[in-house]
Length: 542
Image (cartoon, rainbow, N blue to C red):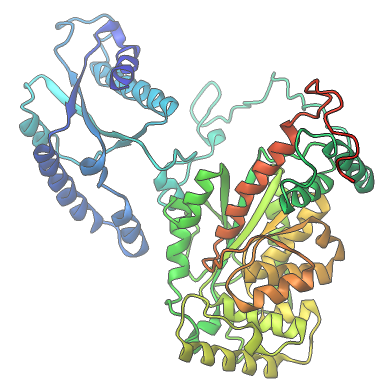
C-alpha cells in the first residue's frame, strides 16, 4: 500500500522533470513523540491568536494523528536537484516547491482512492524539522503528513465542517480576460437534463403488484416477518414495484429549550451546541451508525444557543437562540412556529430527493417539552409520559412531572396541534413537522426515531393527515410516552431495544435493516426468474 501511494506521488508532473521530492517514512515512536511535542507547543501558542469560540474550535483540531497514525511522512524538496539550470525554472525559481506540492496532491488523491486518510500537519518550524531529520542545507521540508485508516472520508474538510472557514464560491475566483472581470462558466456548455422518471403508480396498484411478485419469490411467504410489511409500505410510498434504498439520509434538527432553567436535565444546555459540533465532525454515536449503514447525515440548526454561522456543515435555519421557558411563557410566537415549519419544508425541498429519510433531533430539555406536548395532544397525565430522558434520577424525574403540569396549567386552553406546538414545543420539533409534511408531498418514506420525533409526527399528522402514509417507526424507545405516541400514530416499531439516546440513532439502526430488506425485495429472484418450475408440493399448505 505505501509503495503504491509513494509511486503515485513520484509520478507527479514537475517543471523540467526535476523531480525534486524525497519522502522520509517516520515510524519511530520516540521521534514521533518529539515531533508531537513540538507541534503541540506551536499550536498552543497559535491558539492564543484566536479569541472566544474560534479559539475553542482551533484547540479542537487534532494533532493526535502524529502519535496514532500507522505511518507519518515528511515530504521534502531538494532545491539543488537538476543542477543550477533547470528547464523552465530560469525565471520562476520556486517551481521546484510547486512541483513538490503536486507530488503531495498525487499522494493524497491516491490515498483517498484506497480509503486511506491523510492529514497535513503544517504547524511546525522548518528549522526544527531540519534538525530532527538531519536535512542537508539544500533540502526544504514541505509537508508533514499522517497516514492511516480513518473512521470516515468526509466530503468536506474538517475545518470547514466545524465552521473555521467555508469554501469560497467558485464564481468569485474565476475572471475573464483580466483581473476582476466576471467569467461566464456555463456558456457554450450543454446543460441537458436527465430524462424524467415515469410517474409512480397509484398506491393500490403498487400494493397489488408487490404482493403478487412477493408471492413468487424464492422464499417461504412471510418468512421475513414484519420486515416484509415495512418493505411493502416503502414500495407503496415510493410508488415502485422494487423498493429503493440506495440514497439514505438522516436529517438531524437541533435547538435549545428555555425549560432547562427549571433543572430538568442531567446535562447543561450548552451540551446541545457541543453535540452539534460532534455530529458534523463525525464523533457522535449516530455518526458511527451512519457510516456503518452508508447514511448521509445532514445537520440543521433551528434554535441552538450558539453561533454556527461560519460552520458550512450546519444548515442555518435558526429561528432564535432557544425557546422560552414553557413553565413561565409560551415556547415561541406563532410567527416563529411558522418560520420553523417552513425551514423544515425547505430542508427537504432543497435536498436531492433521497430514497429513505430518517429524522432525529438534538436539544437538551426536549424530552420535557415532548412530554408536555404529548400530554396535551393525547389528554394523558404527565406521570404516564415523563421518563428519565438523559438519565436523571427519581427526584429530578418527579420534578420534571411537576414542571410539565405547570406548563399544561399555564397553556392548557388551546389543545390544537398548532396551539400546542407554539405554546409547548421546540424550534427543532416544529422544523420536524415541516420536514414530514414536505416528505409526504414528495412521497419519501420517513423513518422516525425517538419520543421527540414521534411527538413531532403526531403534530404533523393532526395538521396534515396524509403525513401518516409515509411514516415508519424506527424503534420504540425506553421513554414511557413513546409507546403511547406510537399507538396514537398506529405504528409498530421496527426495533424494540430500550434505546433512549435519541439523536436519530434508533432511526439510523432501523434504516440499515430496512435498506437490507428493500435490497432483498428488489434483487431476489422469483421462482420463474430462477428457472424453478412447480416448486411447491400440491396441497402442502392446506
